[in-house]
Amino acid sequence: MSKMLSTDQMQDLARAGAQMRLQELRAEIAALERLLRGSGGATPSRGAAPRRRARRRGQLSAAGRAAIVAAQKARWAKTKAQKSNAAPASERSTSPARTRSRRRKTMSAAARKAVSARMRKYWAERRKAAGSKGGGKASAASKR
Image (cartoon, rainbow, N blue to C red; front, side, top):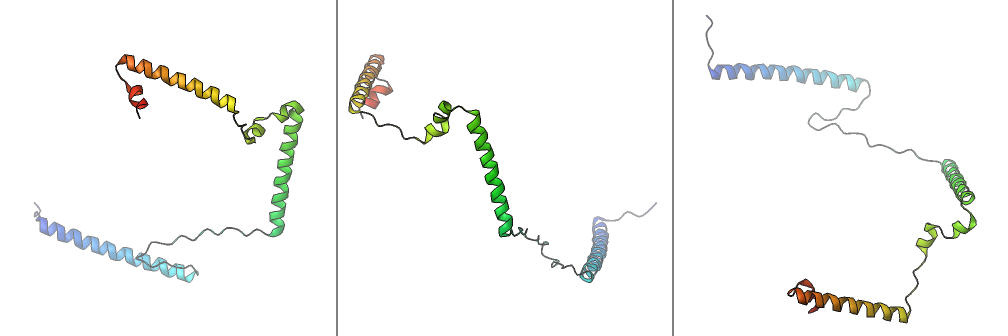
């Protein structure tokens, strides 16, 4: 029967094996770095993580930019023409896009007075209802 190893002996053997494997890996890394240097590739330092190259955006010439602008204007004109042909003249003037940009009309003095009277009546009824229920939130809010 074979001799049993103690825990300390097993740890020493495992450590020695790991160190041997580490030396082999370091030798492989060095060989790969030599290959990369020979082909003109830059090598990052071993301790640091390899840097990613910054993505460089292509430079657009003035003519290229002008061509893109002209194409986009043509697309806008095409969609605008389709919209104007599809909707009759009476519908175009009341389209939602145009009504959104309009300013709301101011309220006349008479209308403001009528709204004020309605709201006074509404809140008086709410206070009355809250008072009959036993002093709820509405009565507390009216005391403020």
